[in-house]
Length: 116
Image (cartoon, rainbow, N blue to C red):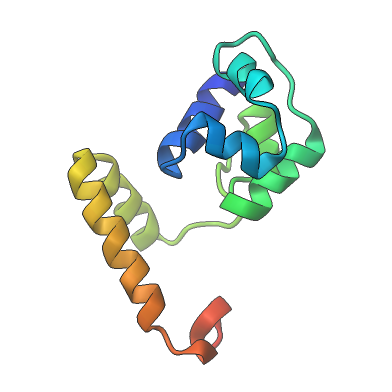
């Protein structure tokens, strides 16, 4: 999978536009446009690490396309959830995302970051 495809996946999965992602990563919009159009074939390891930190995509996947795609291993339930979400229409995805955000807001502070 080419870098432009991986970056397009990140945009789509994170519900960001090119300008937002460029800003979050400290890249110029022109450089990001070049990546998405296949003109710029390289991304620095530090930018790939920032993507991992901010969004959870494995640095190696961002740089090379080698799996796993995500920083941590997903449980079978998480994989099933992702597979189901990938079949949803955009309106349904937004509804699921809103529900997840509400769940996060309802979580007691002691349960953040996996603590119980």
